[in-house]
Image (tube, rainbow, N blue to C red; front, side):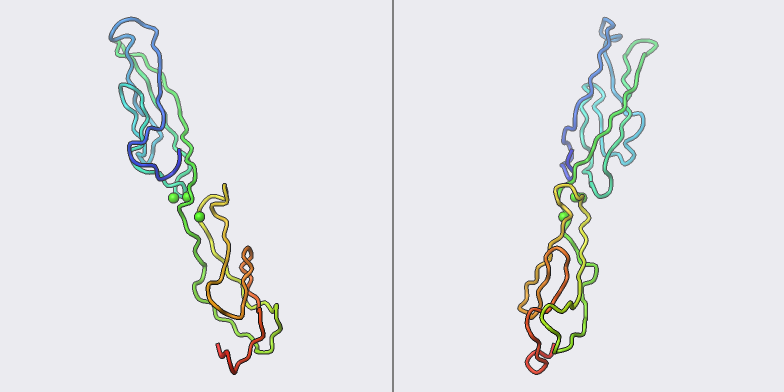
Length: 167
Ligand SMILES: [Ca+2]
Ligand SMILES: [Ca+2]
Ligand SMILES: [Ca+2]
């Protein structure tokens, strides 16, 4: 199941068979007996439909363990349990963010083209699967620097002149 799915999304259905005859001995009821720590899931007592009761965040929790008990209505009731693991699939719901928003570097005006000025870093909390956390750098201002898209390395792209370009 993907993260951020709406409440009420049907995740699956459990079904158990009871070979006994009759309206009570053969009829079953489902109940979550353990797991489901953060109460994200409900299981319908009668039909075993597994539903989402609060949205999942992959970055906070990657799977849900459910232990479900099925019991008949006989007297005494007979039951068995089964465990279910629901894996959460990442969606690209986090934008990358820079580790520092302002970087100040001093560059000599006679630095040559290609001189390394700085390196910027950004992180993205999504999973590496599908490159959801892969970061590319791009500069949107007209400056005498270029930024290497994958490494974030900032280098000088034209000659500086303190008299025309004081900062
Ligand atoms: Ca998320
Ligand atoms: Ca995500
Ligand atoms: Ca992302």
